[in-house]
Image 1: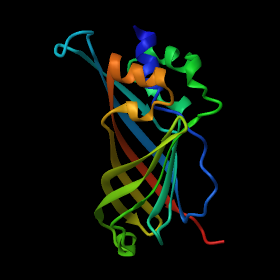
Image 2: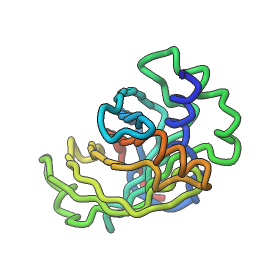
Image 3: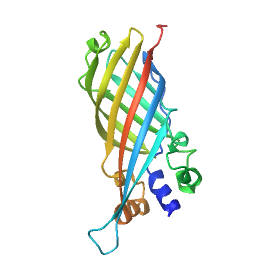
Image 4: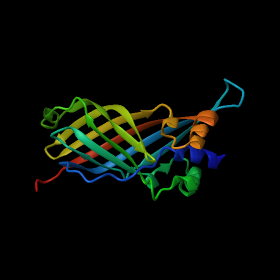
Length: 203
């Protein structure tokens, strides 16, 4: 049971590293909180499915933000996701299907759709909408998110966003994974992200 749960969660967390780009704000700290809901389906029944929620966190992610264009990138190393329920941790990290050397990061590349430069010129919080591409285990899909962008002072910003993946089967890389994420269970992911950005000195 523990092994199957860990494999289902592991389907969500792998992609290639970020390509080098130029940004004038870089993260000094970050926090990702995941709530993964697994709904187990009973063969031949349409009701009565069992549900389970797994909580994970990651404080080793990195992000870069361009205050001129509103473009940003976010990269979360899979190996640094920690289960709130520690009994799942070892199985998650040792599962052979994870291929962490090839797909070591979850990556978002996108922009703040409603971005205005004045958002980083005054010490206030602004509601923002993000659009971009989310890559998990080499599979890239479009995604939208909502959040806030707050200027703390002249050199520091705080960005917060909430991403929702309503059905993880969209990131299945083969028929076997697709079957596991449709016939055996439905996996929904809610990710809350918070990043502290520090302004970089001009070169």
